[in-house]
Image (cartoon, rainbow, N blue to C red; front, side):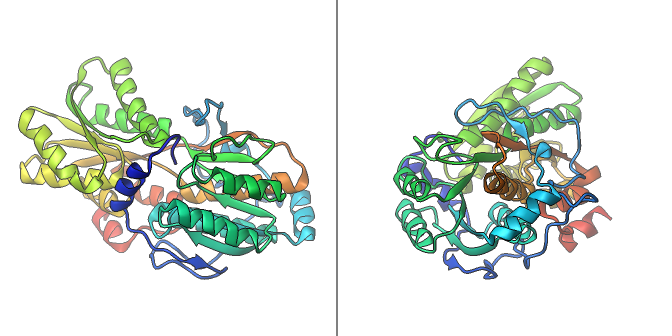
Length: 391
């Protein structure tokens, strides 16, 4: 999730997230409504596995990898019927080593991985949750290695401090696929297969375009950014600000506020609205701090404020559905990110050349498509509260 990260930043981010931790055997589920029983990833008419064909076509991937890699769209990935036959014959095993689990994003990734591995005939022998602790993730990697999996799919808590553990796994011959960011010092094609991420830059652009449309392409806006050296969140803010400055000259960014603890966002947003009572809109770097912006807007009785963000969480989805002050967002597709990671593991097993960096297309979400978007993001219907709000 990040390029360079301090342990202080890790602790601050973790404080804003609900974490649940344990080493899970296959079929053991985290206590979260988004985690669903393991299904089988469907193949297409030719018997191939791809990501969801309903994800919109024609979107240019705008992100680059953490080391400047050119992104390849996840829509180009495929395991053929013949590939699947070879993989199933190998009776391979896999482990999923998370930085944390129990939130929407992590659970959707795990669901996508498990469903796709099941279709591939690959047994998932462990799912671990490091609870955002480096020492626990290193221990998790060692524990998983003792089970001798053929594949590990993981996201490092800290790319520097965990690097040696991942190097040991690579030297043991385990195929490594990473979410969002690889450990420091490891090389694609040599130590690991590939990195898969969302098009975070594209999602920042989507949030800017929604903001501009709702403001009639004029007005004053504020930006609430993540004040830590996280590659993903920096991309989002950079994209939003650059898009506004280059495409919408009559919209001015007049205020910026940084957060490390998302639970403090309401204070930052309140200060921003106090100093700028004529503010027309606020962009928040992800959905949890956007909830703090929403709370501040209510305190200031600013029903006219336009809020946009990134990530389709329940609360911002509900506010969008009812036509409230959250007007839309750019969404990641974590389930299909998991599908992509499993496909790339399959590439290594059958000797296919894998791209170094893969991105899943961004998704622009507004009131008009929030229910469909929820299905695309999580592969299940939206909660009843959101469905009733839109109806």
